[in-house]
Image 1: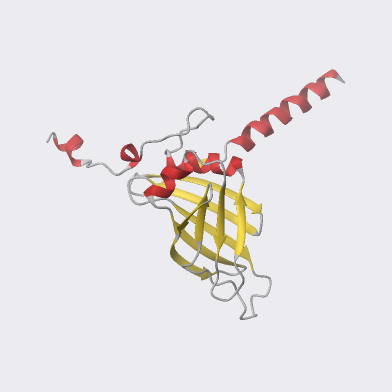
Image 2: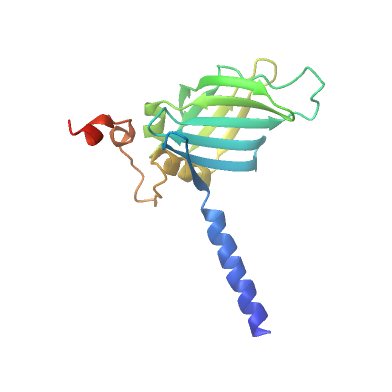
Length: 183
C-alpha cells in the first residue's frame, strides 16, 4: 500500500512540474530559436499562442476561436480595432493576419516594444478583441499566462515576482557578423 501511495505522490509531483513548464522552444532551420507559450481552452479561445523569434521579429499572439459552423458564412473575422489594455491603459494591437482553417478562425497580432515593457510590471492585462462581423470580446488574461508571456519575451528565462523587468535592448537582434568574422 505504501508503494502505491508513493508512486501516486511521485506521479502527481512529476505531472505538476511538467504542467508548469509551459514555455517551449523550437529551433528553426536557420538555427534561430522561437520561444512559445501556448494555452488551450481559456475564455472564449480554443488556443492562445504567444511566440517570439528574438533574432527575427517582435513577439506575436495568435488567437484561435472555434467555428462549429464551417459551412456557415458567419465566421469570426478579426479586426484591426483590437486593443491591449494594461493596467487600464489602452493601446492598439497591430493585426498581422486573420484567416480561417478547417475548424477555427484565427487572428495574429504583434506586440510593440512599449507593450512588452508595460507588461513587465502589469497588474492587470486584458484584450478587447474586435471583429469586422461580430461583437467585441473582452478577455482578462490570467496572471499565470502573463508570467508565461514574460518568459517568452525574455527568451525563455523564468521570472519570479521580484524579477519583473527585462531589457528590450538586450532582446533586440544583434549583428552576428562581428563574432564570426573578427570585425
